[in-house]
Image 1 (tube, rainbow, N blue to C red):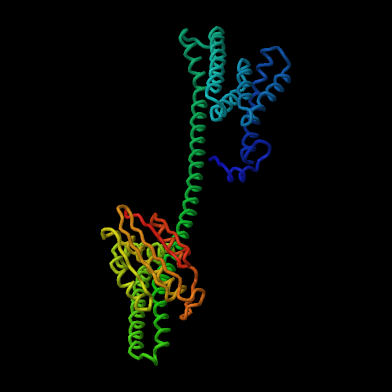
Image 2 (cartoon, rainbow, N blue to C red; image 1 turned 90 degrees about the horizontal axis):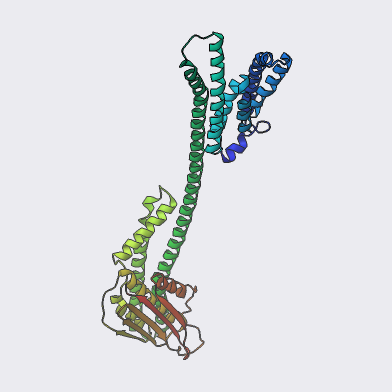
Length: 430
């Protein structure tokens, strides 16, 4: 079994070029057996060559011990095995060396060339040996036996280790490829998990922003009108009791409307609690999906309610002029709610910062878009604070811009040359 990456670095505990200690022990054992074999085969070789037997034994020991470097230099081992084949030595070294060469990462052409050289060398040596035995009379067979025995012996010594080495090498490369692919998939899964967490965090932030924006739109306008009516009620309570009663009734109506809208919003939020058992991001996504469903089904303010919205501001003492241009038609609930919220927040800002100023609300239905503009004139006393003392968090304009830009529209706001303030927005109709 092979290892890659960090596992391979951890597994490397052997000396020199060996990855493991057991691999080193195994190669040392093979080298010892090969050296002993070559030493024994060196005795008849020395007698046939007419050299001292000790020289043949030493030569065999040196030649057989080359098997020790089979993992580092397999080509050298095979070349030595081919070189000592005429001396009828190194059969174990030839088999193991060829197997190691075939299982290595060397090019196939090199493996094939060396295997062919060893096959030819073994074939020639076997042919000569069998021929000599037949000439001496040790074998009494037909002439056909010499080539048959030579070919069979050569193939028997070369083919099995070569094929086994090729199979083991291919299997090792396949295992390494699968391991690398598994590591790659693990890294991809980790990246996907990180991206999923980032998307969940983004969804949570978006949901918080949406909730804050909705809460601001619902509460700010209603409560601002309630504060304005309460201030007027305080001013006329003793002078004009009938008007005071009327203002008190308006305050109650607006409070009930604010509570109704808050209950609807809290109902949307509670609908996502059922998914909390799975995970917090699922609950957030569930609430966002429910909010989108509510918006798509039109359960919210629409442009047909602008008259009522303007009437509430007029009842609070604001002089509001509403004008509608173009042919009135229906839009998607999201577009209508966004347009309504822009006008609502702009009127709220007039109540806060320019109490008593005359305000012009313009709505234009165009071919491919809907445009709205809320512009107020300077307040009666420029620079004076509102008698209602309404607080401002500075999030109204930001929320309006986020809504409009989120639908692909354009939002512009700023003071006018006359000293008033103008809020303009254009939203695509599609």
